[in-house]
Image 1 (cartoon, rainbow, N blue to C red):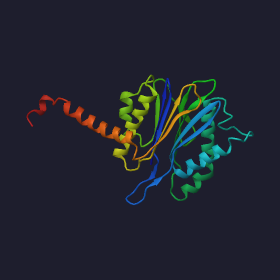
Image 2 (image 1 turned 60 degrees about the vertical axis):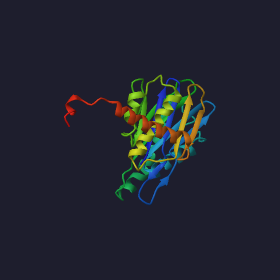
Image 3 (image 1 turned 90 degrees about the horizontal axis):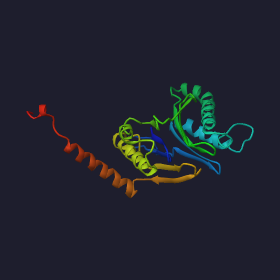
Image 4 (image 1 turned 135 degrees about the vertical axis):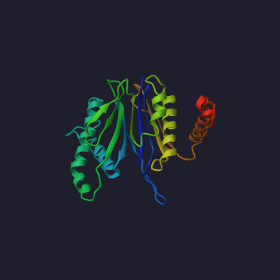
Length: 244
């Protein structure tokens, strides 16, 4: 399984993904799930979750078509809506090719994607793309998307994230959200890929790989746990518990 989150802010975009695909007592596999498409007039980040073979095939096809002028691709898309359409239609192609074969072995075709970025001439945009190739776009009211094991990291984002949150604060929030997920779910794990994009720069401002030896993430995990314990201890007991 996996956990990926993408955030759309006034100042840009923040993306975070883990890299664990299989987890068990004696078997853990690591594969990157963040893919960057960048040139002078655009920057796009694609985060993938679901069946690894399906998402790897998708990314391979998308990359292979970047220089193909005979069909739509991520470099020929005039705007981010067209880019999301390219990804969705490519995912449908992979489904048509592989879904029946997977079903014969009782394996479900499963994929969920986050696509975000900016193409020159329009503001940054963020999309969530489903296995059927259809998608939705982030709005001022819904300014982030999650795919994969989303339930553990969602509450902290809902409480803190706003459209005017800074990129630095949003990156920290994404890491706290990921820590909550890693703490509660064995199928999500390090290393992490953190990507930040500033509005109108049309390039990646930060792409950081975070492993277990990263001192900031280790300190963040410890301080967040301590802060939660302190906040919990400071909560007053209700009157009706005093007799226990």
